[in-house]
View 1: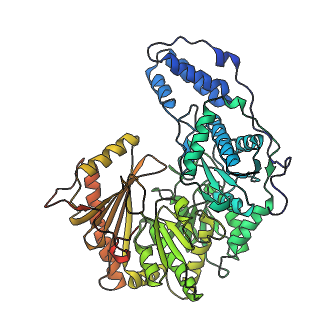
View 2 (view 1 turned 180 degrees about the vertical axis):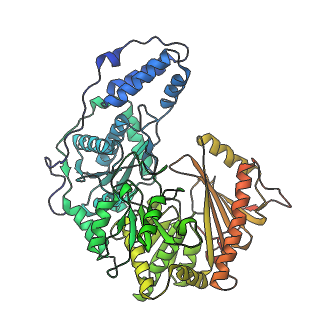
View 3 (view 1 turned 30 degrees about the horizontal axis):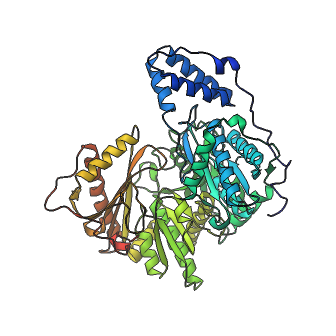
Length: 620
């Protein structure tokens, strides 16, 4: 441990969570069940109310039962859906819409998760400890305090971060405090109605998010707890509070990766999240000029009033930031998502609507990867690994090969990227970057912002531009272009039907580009375990990957094209043209309800998977 012991009882900041009992009339009321509501369902719902410490969700579920019993069909259907299962606890922890019942995020579900995690930690080792963080979403602070009370009551030393803070601060605190585990209450960039529960493990796991088999073992303990009432679980308000020095040290170490002070004029938005306080302290400590802020989005607001979705990837999410950039004559836009673990970068572009565009996650990823590789090369380091998720651009593999560095491709998610041995830099195309693995083992949108400002500052000092830097990259490694098609659906059933249709009638061409081979991950592929993913390799090194989102009801298609012919500018233009064909072809394939027309024999399954780079077919 460092500084004052944050796990010392009695050092808690916020007061105890409200655990006042349920209204007996609401819990014990006899309800006559009509045909729409089965008696056992009504009994389960009443039992849920009886243990729920939250007056809001108690009343919500009580009203839903009453309406269903009175014969309201939509209410009966909703009641049945809310008790149709449980939010699954997996490698992403828990995430879902707020509300009453086991298929929603609420204090009962969080209590069960906390008690289950406590049981897992107590079985794993002596005197376990946990540090708990939370963001600015609805109920995040309440869920965090419930977790602290239940952990402490179970015998796990618990410490709560001093206030709502970014996810990277919690991930850092797990390592910095030597905790056995960490919990972050956040739904990251999900819609306002959602919240979530991320779990990290210390010790041999070095502060990374959970992966199998830990997730299954924790889930089993949660299921055991859920068979009883949370009212029987011991609680204690004698949990500790992590010292302010944890935040100070995160700020110091993040600022230390800056290579030089900067006068770059940046616009910053926190997207209604918790990033600004910490990010501004980091920028000041790094010697960066204070950014121009998007004031309407600067401070936490769980309703995210200025954006349809608080995700910097979503169309329109950066409109206010671009408006601010145009008005201020800024050089770059820096945008964190609500829990500040992701980073979006906006740049001036005369060809874009409004004169600004967002760099893709792949563009930022391969530029920061190139920066990391050059740093290793300058230090004459003969070891170092670059890593990215398998749905990210093949460009990083080309960088690694050029500098004779190791390259690792992982399953999607930083829980996998962060565990790569010898990691120097890792990223995923969904705006996640890990630039300082010795400090934190998760994506970090604030440290990535420091790297981006450093890169832009160096380009300006050298008298060059980002546009030229992208051309230089294409000349050195090949011209790469990537994009994504994201289709929001009603539920997992629609996703399953689409994936089944694609498997049943595999396309022979997409957008006029011939499919050479297909890798189906359903039964596992090479070193990868089974997953719902299809990877199609096309002529000329193009690639298409189709998979469901792991956190939202979306089907995602990842498109990549590459060219090595001509100058850097010509390579980028050729890759962009091929990408446009892929995009049009995949949209037709998904929207028309059938695959592209077949010609000749079917592509082989798992036939091509070389070492990657320009071919776009890097191995597993």
